[in-house]
Length: 181
Image 1 (cartoon, rainbow, N blue to C red):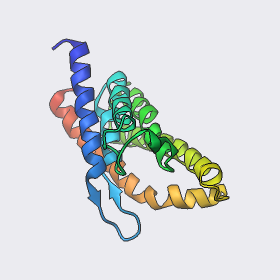
Image 2 (cartoon, helix red, strand yellow):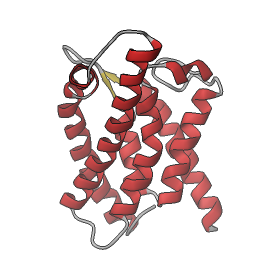
Image 3 (cartoon, rainbow, N blue to C red):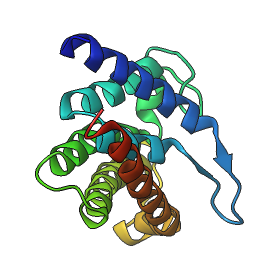
Image 4 (spheres, rainbow, N blue to C red):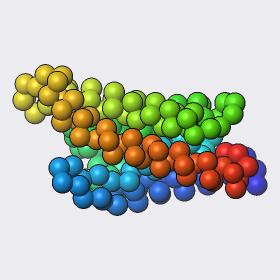
């Protein structure tokens, strides 16, 4: 298959997986989680940097255009949502993960650390937009410590588990496919 078509097909596939992952909820006592982040990690870990970036950019653009692919729906008004930064973070996160993992040897530690780098990017953009949203859109004065308490701390352990699961899946898939998809 020609590289351009393969890139587009794989990007579209992971766009769909990310959308489906947003609706698969795992109810936890305090914070329900979805499999969306896992799909973002897998897109970066399994695809080329271009395909990974394209898959997440297409997902965000689909949601902003009104297709209800986000966990909370869709539409341009989502740009004012407190969680919009996390969605925007998926785009560079997938690209960075792919750049890291597609250089040199691939081992569990490297894959896991690449996934954690991507999660850190999503947290950075997410916390920034959450802080701005709470303070300037919602008009609720909130300091950084409170924002971290709302938007990072409850998700650290589940995201560590997702990074580990993504790393294990990646090793198995790459063994079968003999490299990135």
